[in-house]
Length: 226
Image 1 (spheres, rainbow, N blue to C red):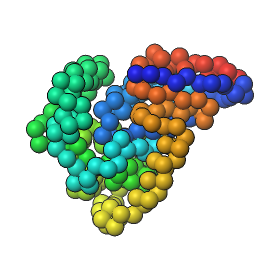
Image 2: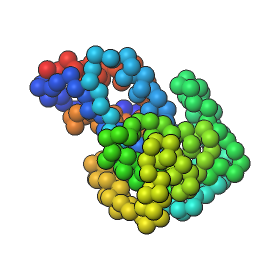
Image 3: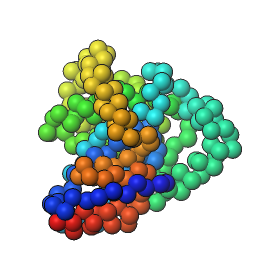
Image 4: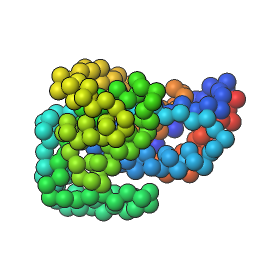
C-alpha cells in the first residue's frame, strides 16, 4: 500500500516517539497494520513509543444495525475483486497471526459506537487502549461479531474493567457521538482519506499497513534526527 513519507523532520527531536493511529475497527488492513506496528515497536525497545487511537469511518453511512458483510463487499467490489482482495488479505493476516473469519451471517458494522467506547477508554488511565483495540478488531475480524451491537460492546467493555452499567446507559443515550464525529471530521480535514494512517510526532505521516522493517526504519530516522 502507498506510503507518504515525511516532508521534513524537525532537527530537535527526542527519542520519544508519539504515534497517532487513525483507523477504523471494521478495516481489515487496520488490524494487519496494528499487528505490524506492534512487531516494529518490539524491535526498538530502546525507544519510548506511545500510541494513541484516532477514529475514522470508512462507511459513515452504514446503517446502525449493519449489513450482511458478504453482500456489502460483493456490492462494493464485485464478486471477482472481492475474492482477490480476500486472498491477499488472508495471506497478509497469516503473517501476523490473524485468521480472518468468513461466516455467511457476519455483519459489516457501523463502527461509531465502537469508536465512542475507545474515546471513553482513552479518558481512563486504568484502561489499556491498545488492548481494547485488539479486542475490537478481534471481535469483528476473527470472531465475526457485530461490533456495532451494544451487547457486544458492553461485553468487551466489561472484559476491560469498564463499568458496564454506565457504558450501556451512555451508548443507548448516544453520549459523545458528536465528539467522535468531530474527530473524524478533523482527520479528514487534515488530509486523511484512507486508513490505517500513522501520524508520527506531529511531523510526518505514513499511510497503509506498512511492514515492520519500514516502520523501524522510520523510527530510526526520527530518533536519530536530534
